[in-house]
Amino acid sequence: MPFESPEDIRREVAALEDIFNPDGGYFLCNKKKWSFMKRPPLHIIYFPIAMSTVSMGDFLLYAILPSYYPHLGLAPIQVGILLSVNRWIRLSTNHTAEYCYRRYPSNLWLISAFSLGSVVTIVYGLSQLFIIILFARILWGVSFSFIRQAGIMEVVNSSSDAHLGENMGYFRGITAIWRTFGLFIGGACHDLFGFSATLVGLGILSFLSVPLGALSQKKSLPIKDKPVKSASGKKRNFGVICCGFVLGLVGGGMIMSTLGLILKAHVGESFMIATYTIGVATLTGFIMGLRWLVDGIGSPVIGAVADRIGRQQSIRILFPLNALVLAAVSSFTRPVPMVFFIILFFICSTALMTLLSTQAGQGGPRSVASYATAIDLGMSVGPIIGWSIAQFEFPANSIFFSCGVIYGVGSFVAFKTFGHSVRYPYRR
Image (cartoon, rainbow, N blue to C red; front, side, top):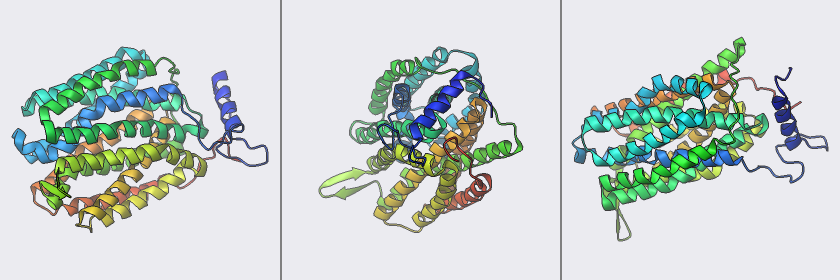
C-alpha cells in the first residue's frame, strides 16, 4: 500500500525499529533497551492532566448529587436531567468540535474550552437553583466536546500503530490517576465543608488546566482526515459506534449516575469503621477515586498488552467478561463483594474505552466525532433510565441486572464486528 507522505514513511520505520527482534520474532519492545513499554510524548502527558483537572467538578457531581439532592430541593428526575443534559448537548456539538479541529488552530478554541469548564465548576457551587445548574451543565457539555476531540486525535496523530493502544492507555491512565485524588478529597471535603465551598474551590483549582492545555498543543501534528471507504471498514465503524453506545449507556450513564443511590440503599446515610463515621458521599467518592487509581496504574499496561495480542481480540474478551461481572454484582447485597465487583467492572470498562478509542481514532476526526456522539447518547439516556428505575421503586440491584443484559447484546455486536483480526505492520 503506497505511503502518502515522507512523514508516514518516517512513522512506519520508527514503529518497525521499536518492535523488530533481529533473532526472528516480533515483540513490543525497544531493540536497545528491550523494555516492554516506552514513555509517551510529553504533550500526551500534559493534555490528560489538564483535562482531568477541569473535569473534577463534573465527576464530583456524580458522587454528591445522588445522596445530596434533597438538600438542594431537587426531585430524582431532575437529578437524572442534570447528570445527562451535558451529554445531550454534545450530540450536536461533537461534530462542531471536529470541524473546528480540522479548520482552525487548536489554541483558539481549546483554551476557551478549558476556561469555560473552570467557570462552570464555580457556578455549581455558587447557585442551588435548578435552572442555573442546568445552564451550567449545558455549557460544560459544549466545552468538553472540544477538549475530548482534541485529546483523542492528539494521541492518534503522535503514535505509531504499534504503540497506539499503549499511548491511549497512558492518556487515560494519567487522567485516571489525576482524578483519583480530586474525587476522593472532593467527597471528603463535601462531608466536612459543604457543597458550595468544595465546588468553588475545585473551580478555582481547575484554572490550572488553561496553561497546561496550551502547552500540550505546542508539538501538535497536523490532522489528515482518512475515512475508511471499504465496505468492511464501514461495517467496522458502525460496530465501533454501537459498542461505544453500550459503553456509555451502562458505565458512564446508568451505573455512574446511580452508584451513590445503590450504596445508600445498602449502607444507609453513613456507617461505622472502628470509631469513625463514614458518609455515603465519602464512600461513593472513594469507590470512584479507587476506580481511577486502579485504572491509572493498569491502563498503559492493558494498552501495551492489547497491542501485542491484538486490540480487537481484547475487545471480544472484555465485553462478555463485563456482562458476567454485572450479573454477579446484581446477586450481592453485602457491601464488600459488591464494591469488589464494581471496581472490576470499572477496570474492564476503562480497557474497552481505551481500545474502542483507538479503533475510532484510526478512522480520522469524523470517526472520532461519531464514536463520541454514540457514547454521549448512551450517557444521556443512561441516567434517565437508572433514575426512572429508582422513581418506580424497583430494587436497586435491578439496575445492575439490566446493565448485564445490555452488555450481553454488546458482546454479540463485538463478536460480529471484530471477528476477524487486522494485520498490523509488525505482524507477518
